[in-house]
Length: 198
Image (cartoon, rainbow, N blue to C red; front, top):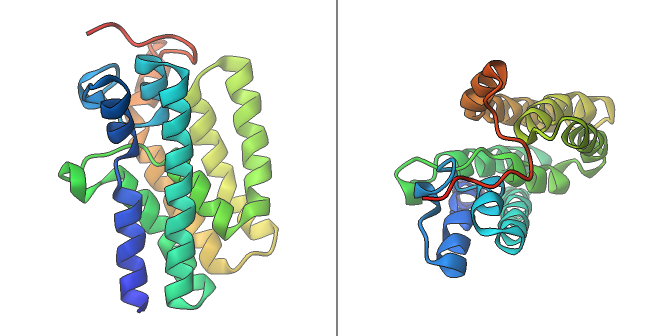
């Protein structure tokens, strides 16, 4: 059952929510529009607020569900932690998209809401403050996720949860490397800027 829980966590995380929402909302392949990413930010920029919000909520829900299922089938916090990490991995390297995918932020948010909910609060404050101040979603996401494992550890959650948070943060930072390069060049688009038309 534990192995099944881990597998299901990956598969749930691998569901390409943004791709499905974009096809339903506009009949487009979101991978060929804007930044080419299937996440909520690109869906928002390309198709507007409602599809972007639906994508965000869907990604959060699948992260929460993946960690919950893994913890339930594994009957322990260590398996829930593994499930949270696998949900992020599934989102980033989806078997349904030939090991391509998103950047893991919203899925990670949902997964750690299930795993370590109080640790999300300080990371959310960091994200909101940076996004409001600088309007770079990528910068806010990277710095917020880097603070998550610290919050998980300081708030007394199981060490496995802190390790999973650290590993998920590493994955998310790696997936944002092109954004970070654009930030260094001053070429990163700000929140609210629409994607260029195809």
